[in-house]
Amino acid sequence: MNAVSAWSPSLRVGISVADSPGSELVHLGLSPLHLRHAFIELVRHVLAAGWSVAYGGDLRTGGFTEALFDLVRTYDPNNLPGPERVTNYLAWPIWTQVDVDSRAAIANLARLVEIPAPEGAPGSLKAPAARDGNERLWAAQALTLMRERMTTEIDARIVIGGPTSGQAGLLPGIVEEADLALAAGVPVFVIGGFAGAGRVVVDALTGEEPEALTEAFQIQNTAGYEQLLSAARAQDRGPDFRALVARFRSAGFSGLRNGLDLKDAQLLARSDDIDEIVALSLRGLRRIASPQQQT
Image 1 (cartoon, rainbow, N blue to C red):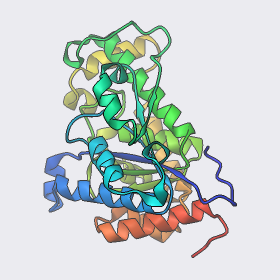
Image 2 (image 1 turned 45 degrees about the vertical axis):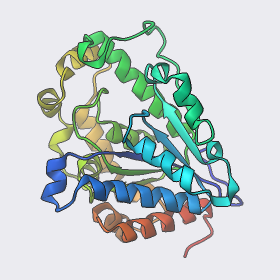
Image 3 (image 1 turned 180 degrees about the vertical axis):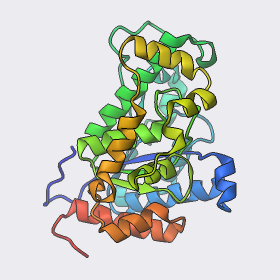
Image 4 (image 1 turned 120 degrees about the vertical axis):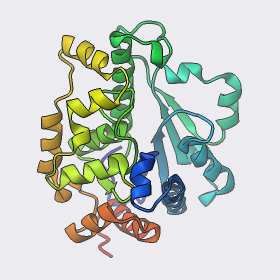
């Protein structure tokens, strides 16, 4: 679905969002509520434009997925049923833990896409804290498979916030989603004004070498990462942080292909003004939906 016809205004917009480290937000004079508000406004305007939203996340109480479903409950653009407006991608084994009642509760709110376990994976995994290196690697591979599938089915991706460590994967999730989108030629809107992984991506795009995108940082700040890394290297699957940073640097803002000129793309990357962020994102999305539209 990546290639959008010039005759069709329809877009599926992937949203990469999670809570940023609280200390980073406080340093900027912001709070998690500001990030949540930015997410809600972005999604609200995407839905109002008649487009659909894709999101990869679990169904935890109080999470961004729940906020997304709340929007669908209260906002019904074009009288489209929820499953046509929201697609929620779930990695294995997360979807195996979603009970019947939870599925029924969201049946009219979103389409759930359950990504199969990686080939050769065991039937189940222990709780995250109890996993050994190999089980951590299976979980990491499952998350990557989910993100790869989602990347093939979206027409643009918005990146905002997110933790820089503590993830279950080999890379911070939002960083991996941005990297996959760029590699696939999917337009990317990077918002770094709310700190976290979004800011890390912005820094890498500008040629910096973010500390968060180093092996030493992840070992120090992500529980179990050393065991995960050892298991990954045994299968020649370890992350190449230098190559990752180099890919972002090589792409730069011009490589985002998001319909914005260089000045606007850079403005979006640094802004924490929600109205400005929404306006710039919509400008680019409209141009992606209708390439002949230049205003």
